[in-house]
Amino acid sequence: MLKEKLLKVFADHPGEFVSGEKISQQLGCSRTAIWKHIDELRKSGYTLESAPRKGYRLVSKADGIHSHEVRVGLKTSRLGMEITYFDATESTQIVAHKLAQEGAKEGHVVIANEQTSGKGRLGRKWHSRSGTSVSMSLILRPELPPQKTPQLTLLTAVAVVRALKKKLGVNSEIKWPNDILINGKKLVGILTEMQADPDMVQSVIIGIGLNVNQKEEDFDPEVRDIATSLALEKGEMVERANVISAILNEFEQLYDLYLTDGFRPIKSLWEAHSISVGTYLYARTMREVIYGFAKGITDDGVLLLEDEEGKIHHIYSADIEI
Ligand code: BTN
Image (tube, rainbow, N blue to C red):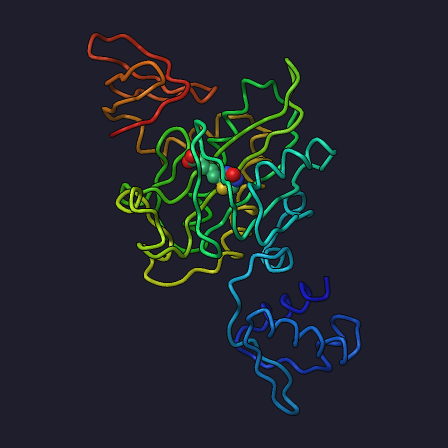
C-alpha cells in the first residue's frame, strides 16, 4: 500500500523533486519508512534520484505490473480493487476460475508476467514471452442468462480499442468476434469463459492477452508475419501497467453503460470499430467454410453472413479471413 501511495506522489509530480518531509506528511509515515521503500523501488528497477535538501525525483520506471504499479493509474470503483499477481503461472484463466469458485468478488483481476500454458480460443495455445506482454483475466458476476455472455466479449474488444486510442493514440480495429488488429496484424486476443447454472451466469472470466513490448524475433516464427506489438507499432517501449489500468478504466465505464442501458450502445461502438461488418469475408467454422457478405451482428453477438445465393448464415464461432 505504501509503495502504491509513493508511486502516486511521483505520478502527481512528474520530473520534479519532492522533499522527504512532504512525502512523509502526505503518506503519514516516517522518513526511514520512505527511504526503505525508495530503496525497494530501486531494487525492482526504478531509477530514483536523491539530492540533499531537494528530496527524491523519479527518473524512470521499471516496466512492472505488480498490483501497486497497476493501481497508480486506476480510476475505477469496482474493477481492480483486488489484484492477484504472479511472476509466472500456468494461465491467468485457470487461476481466475479457481478464485471465482472460491467466491472472488466482481472486479477481481489476475495478472501474470509470464504464462507457462496460456489458453487461446478454440482450444489453441496462447504464447507470450515473459515480461513483454499483458496477460490478465477479469472476474465478473453479471446477472445475465448464459447466452448473453458473448456480448461481454464484444464489450471487452471495444474497451481495449478505446483504451489504446485514449492512452497511447494507437488506432486498432476489431475482427469478429474478438481479435484486435493493427494494419491486419493481431495485437490482442480475448477469451471469454463462464461458470453458469442453466439459466443464470455465476461468473464470467474475461482473459485478455495483449502484445506490448515484443520485438519481431520474440514471436514464434509461425506467427511472426501475422502478429504485432504496441512497441513495434509505436517504435518505442510502452509501460504495461499503464495499458492495464487504461483498459480497466475504460472497461468499467462501458460495463456500467451496459448494465444500465443494455447492449445497444455497445453494439454501435463495436460496429464503429469493426472491420468485419459491411464487407465480404470467409468464415471458417468447425464444419465448413462460408463466403459471404457480413451484414452485421445480432444482439447476441452472432455474425450474420449472406452467401452468394442470398441465404443468411448465423455464425456462432469461426475464424474469419477478410
Ligand atoms: C485468442 O485465441 O485469441 C484468445 C487469447 C487469450 C489469451 C489470454 S492471456 C490472459 C488469459 N489467460 C489465458 O490463458 N488466456 C487468456
